[in-house]
Image (cartoon, rainbow, N blue to C red):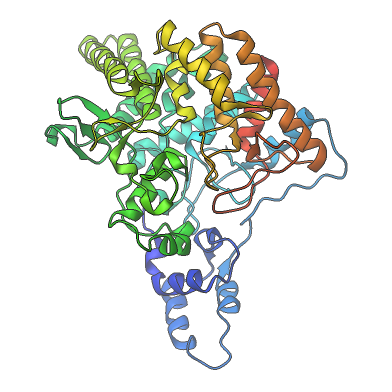
Length: 492
């Protein structure tokens, strides 16, 4: 796979375009496809840029293709919501059999989220698969798994999304859960042996550097506590502005720490870009400290990956590996209890690697140990009470208890956590609460669809009369994981 980041080749032009804000959305320029050799475009730009009457936007639109920059969905009349989603699956299906600009090639068709997001996204795809399962689109589910495997085999991990500027970070590791979903769909256990090598490669990516660690230190995505216990954190190798949010990052970096860009990018690996969860002061993005935090969601997902590797090893009669991954999973389960269970609040929280204590942020990722069956009955009961008291509103589950204007904070409700919340509560027999979570969010989705004809990226859980907002860009319609979770919840 050609990993060349062509944005680096047009750095002067790219920098000028983003700083001039000639496009409302900075993602436009990162998605643009050069129509001529980059060396020619650069030479032409250097020659013309200082000349009288030069228009930067005219130059860019003459040299780059912006087709497909945004997915728009139009309907003559409003269909019933389920029929609308069935049509959306086809409209959101893309292919990329060759690289174009920053877009990575993939061997199979895939579903994009929608709106400004016109590429393959990692963790989105799991929640999309939930709906594809309901729609009976097993082949597309298999395509998604095959694309993830291709990326892991060729890049070493699944990037945040299928573009060259995401080759420094991944997203929450859902590949092993995708295999579970396929197994649940077709009952073929061979799925685990087929992708055993892929599972191992993804695990190696997340654990890379563990052998170099001393106590109370971190490297890449692994950290050792002062007691010598191994935890994981989100991380990005680059410490530079994100191309897709270039000027935003430069402006936000004023009065911020020296690793501000890496902390920003590392939060993007979590999928939560952005939230008070990452802020040292709980309010301002300049205090972001993602690198100092080990996360309950990531460590829970890696426990599932270890359990899946033990399973695939057993199916292949690899006894030594089965024992190894069984031990790793058992050790991680203990660490999740030790480091992420906060005795004071009786809830799961992230762990601050420098302060050696739980972070104060109350957030919905506390659901993960229940979603994956890691919590005991007493823990589950306590978390369920927290969810009911602090996170459940008339429009669904919110992500945090703080309102900062960031999109992963109050008052927004995001599709993934409605499914995680529903399933977590069902796992421990809190059926009434599960139904309330399901009904509150589904009714919100239906209301917005009835009013707008759109399925949105996120929803306002507190004020169900308004559209959700916050963050770096307007609320998007389409929308992959909303479609998937809505169908799956309605089926249950």
